[in-house]
Length: 395
Image 1 (tube, rainbow, N blue to C red):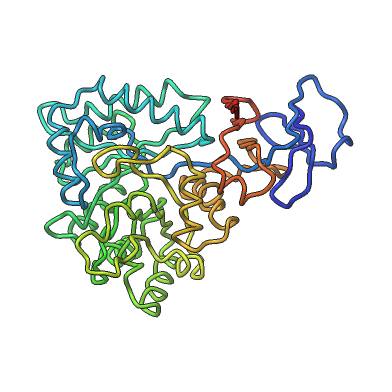
Image 2 (image 1 turned 180 degrees about the vertical axis):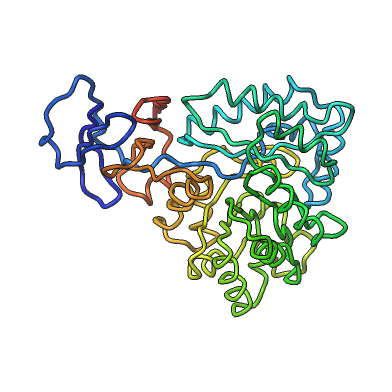
């Protein structure tokens, strides 16, 4: 396929030749010969396709169903656990497919979703729904499944990975013994031969230790598989020098960090006296330390967050407004940074890259983020997998 007249992030229009799922040529407009298939992207900004590094598709669209009030993290956990008692495999499958389709139409070609070990006699019913969904969208969306294990028995986790789960997740800060929870996660992940993605320090307590414990456990075990820490909110509550030291420790351990601004801004800070603190990790300290920084949308209209559009560009816009990143840094976190955390090769409008691309009808990065431009074309391995065109009429 030949893409004509696309505006690249550097501000210059280019033509791109796609072949074999890759970008093979990038050249000034009109200099590449016509091909058998062409797409005119004049007036569109062409970006790497975003990846969603942290979703909860099994929880998506349950805000009204679960009856959760505006709440903090412990209250949201309680509301979800009450609803999870009656969750069925088909319920999860329908809601997860809706949320994943929304992500795909907004540009995400790769998604990592966490899935709960559910209460009751069939704890893996949510996982089975995700496995079915992964197969259904194969070729359109790369779906990775992280098992959010909490205190699930080892036997249940072994069954989950025998069925085909990809990554071991967990929430050490919700465990009675966070250090034991972190060590168990690293040990089991090594046994199963999978990476680790933990919800870490999802609170504003600067003494919270998940991230420190994870870095120490990774080094102590000589763990060589990919490791991700998501949330890491307490890092943003630390004094600058302490946050910088911990960020360097995280970089040295090879841990990627996923910041989740929408849900963390919603849940964190309730009950604090004014001024209310920001519920964000220390994104600048992490970048300065050389940590691979990704950003995700986390929850979509469930007990943990009643809003959200399943749009990575919304996440990037929040990083600009609340995290004080530049538009380029914010877009990098939802594109190249997110793909790196997921272990995927680079994608984007440059030669040799995977041809996972997002064309947005916008004239600049700031317009794409600020105007939430809905007109989009999504390419997966050089093939159009989604096209959104909006018609607006002004009387």
